[in-house]
Image (cartoon, rainbow, N blue to C red; front, side, top):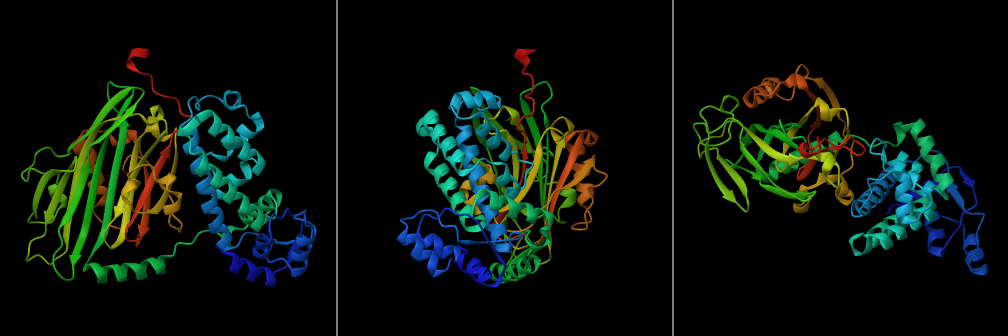
Length: 468
């Protein structure tokens, strides 16, 4: 994938010499080994070569990105396989007994899956290639056909190729990652704002319209009187929709979800945050353009669909803000995959996107938040962190807003703080009990989704009513 660039740097950089196990001539060529090494490989029947040079120093930009992809893929496949194995909530010694694998290997797998680790640091915590292969084989044997052994094995082999080409050995790779961690300026992901701005201009020309600010505000708390369910609020704002050719309607959907866990079948329903207002829709009218745009509502493919018509004569910027509340949803710690996430789809050119999540304090301090951007596709409505192949490069960060709404303001839209306060007021929730998280992006990538995920692995499960 990035062999030519590595070879170029190999010929221009200072190299070290380490012991490397080489499996094939093509691998030697990828490493940039001299012809003499190739002849030695042929003459010695694939025995160990000790004259293969490997790159020294911190990882460069292409290696950094390749390592991130390899790590995301490997950890995603490990998590997927473990989720399909019963009893994975047991402590590491129990997992070792269930799989029949050395306890140290299991401990290192669990350590490498810690969601608080960045992708490259996680690679330094995972076991070696032999241990990973043993673990994958044990999962396949124990889990049967339900475990994605083929996908996991392929991910382990991809990691092995990365180790050999970038580090020469696992110890060599760890040294280079540690050097990168001490001086990340040259290798870490960049914002690519200039590139995203060019894409925004091109997308605006293609679609004929653009949005000043795309807003998503979500809030989640335990349901009153129920220890095992949560309820939530969701506000979506489309601020400054401008049509440069013909006016374009907004089409939005709220999907009715049905999920089963712990033998409980639950249907998650959505209802307007404001109740049945004058339009019969879920518009928060005081934050919409005046006069209100013409709107329609119907049920479509198992979900609720809202269509907002700007009108044939409206060419001025239009603001549309909608709010819903949903309930019930199973507490994230009771799911096989103990995470809660929200997605913000960027399906039109956008100058600024603001994704806010407010968690009840009983949830906020028992999870690990992460954020990323992914190429949108129909199957990404679930946990986006498993779509490692769709992850987009770039630096995306989470800002802690603290308790309440005191830090809710943003220069992306002057009314953002007022909208946040109004959301809690309409729902009758106390914002002082909530803790806020934010991801704000300039010129988010067209046809992508921003995903904010909260990992509750290891958090105590709520007590059910029949267990009290």
